[in-house]
Length: 439
Image: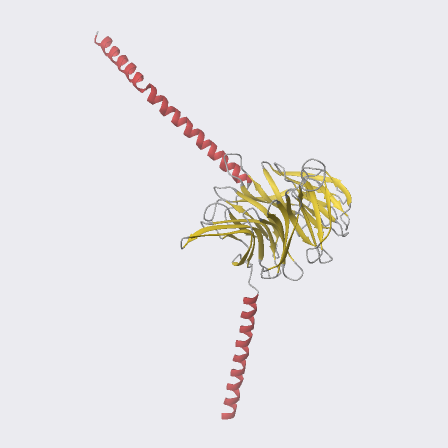
């Protein structure tokens, strides 16, 4: 009897130990893979003495996000002046919680414009470095954001870096604008480096006007597609294959081998071409705005961010637009407050939602701050689904309210102006009436 009881107790003890072990494994695995929230907003820093800009966002291999832009902070402490400024790299968790930031000290004019995670888990950044003149800046970091190397490219005039990608051979391709080389004015500049940032070749495209480069992507044939004031296709050595005068701030290859271009004029325009750059369709998605970033989504449609809605009286807002595969708008959302808010970069996330970054003057500690927004697949960041339609209705209501206000003020002003004469006339009429009645 005692033996049976002892055996049964030991069995329960072993089962309990197993259950505790199993639960600990589940808890550990849950902690290791932080669940990603569908919707959130995060102002990066946003202190009174900070000025931060977000120009490019990428989801990282751990599910978090990395943002590049600029950082500026000036403060006084202990009777001394302190200044930190330059291009920055900011890392967050999957839920937007700040992890770390690196500032590559230079000047306030130095910015990171594009960032990509590299095959070794580090990051490659391009932007602009300001010395005697501005130069294209290429920065390589490790996975913790520590600089491994940096290099600049430029001539006697100003040159700017806007977009970078790691290439299939482990090197890097950079697109930007040059005033130092080419036919004059602003020209498209394409630079290819090896894995250590040493230039292998560079090419200049453009005429004597303003034809700057804003984006670059390696295509499936090993060549490159460049977006900007022109759409340029090259082979793997940067030799021109064709050029189309299609303006766009961002150009990307699509699933069918063609290209999608987000317009960079005064309207948010989306243009689709075939593999030879011939236009298939073009859609005006919004007026009085600018499209800065576009990506094809998993359903074959497109997601665009930029800014719009401003009219000189009303500040512009960060815009997110989703279309189908033919460029027909499915929905649009607007984010921001009472100040100027601009979107610069958007990506589809692992859970099917979207991550976008930009610059806000509405939130934070005043001045410019970086805004990072995560939405679900429908683009909602909260219950307030603000879009162009609700914005126009709000403007209409504001216009009607303003009209009523003007009418009331006008009536009160007229009454104040003519009140005394009207009272005198009315008094005289009453006296005359009473006098005649007595007679």
